[in-house]
Image 1 (cartoon, rainbow, N blue to C red):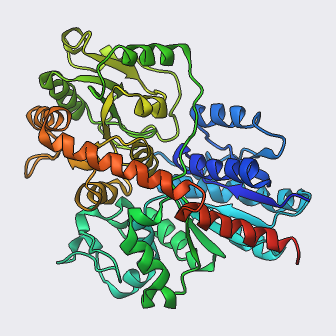
Image 2 (cartoon, helix red, strand yellow; image 1 turned 90 degrees about the vertical axis):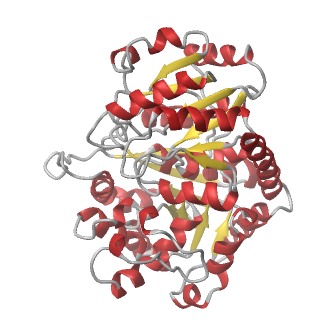
Length: 474
């Protein structure tokens, strides 16, 4: 009998993709049967397309849609994104228990992510071990495990602390780099986040989408530091980098790749700010003119700007596309014709990053995108927007040395066109860019070695596989 595990990601492509990559790995490399639960309430077009294609991959990979729930009376326009995710998740998994009971054979484990911890109580009733796949970076994992202590010890707002946050065994974290959800403790977002991370110690194990050599200090602290051992922190398994392996290409995607085919090696800057990110109107104008002034080749993925919310397209990514000429600066498309390609809403990101002509990636520093860039050996211009992206940006720039940051002037919110021009030229043509590309190549080799047979992530996942298989014998 094949060992059977289930997965339950929270809504959003950034949560679904890494859990699904692990599910595929278990099915195709380790002989598992997988039931992959999907929350369908307010799902985006991109998520719907993804799950349709996923359902065709293997009879051992069963996609199970949780019934849609009516959240119209409990989701409001002024709710922040994390609160919406958690409310939708809580309502959706009310149907999970009978669906788990119906599975045959009973799963030996349920793998959740950071915002589906409500499932722990259900699985305790059913005697199913729960493992948390922490899909974000190790700085956020360390901070999340430390947060209940920080919450208890600190009065007032964390952002008002006079010094960086000292996380045991880890590098100090500047208050300006803290997760958005931790910057207003009176908001429901903070309460939801604290609730979910306070449950991490009750998991049977924590899987992390990274590899040992990328963050030696924090991984060692999570495993060995006396503070984390006393929580107690469950066993930590670095099993990454797990990224998408392939993408479905549309006709317009083929046109983009054909354009790349005709460009010199490492000459194109890829600009994409994630599946949920949107710029303000003023920032989009400055970014566009900064790209034009740099005279560098580029692919710009652009969405209709919003001045209200940087994560404004989280639940609508993959929907109908707008006409970029309606909100890009007048004359921009004409001035950059032949130099750049402007794409509304969505591109096959992995295919672009893999291409020999791509020389750098202007990225929001979401962890999935950061890993995709590292695995392909592409340096970055860090452009964090929301959630934990600022701490990821700091890690990539100051610790790993694979990125530079385009910064706004002191007292300004918007990064100006001249700064963008200078940064782009520095990365694409300057000595700094050569150093970044060399470092990116080192990390590409390191990532591949971790995943190869005998590598640290390969061995970590193999240990997990043995644990799950041992549950069959009990």
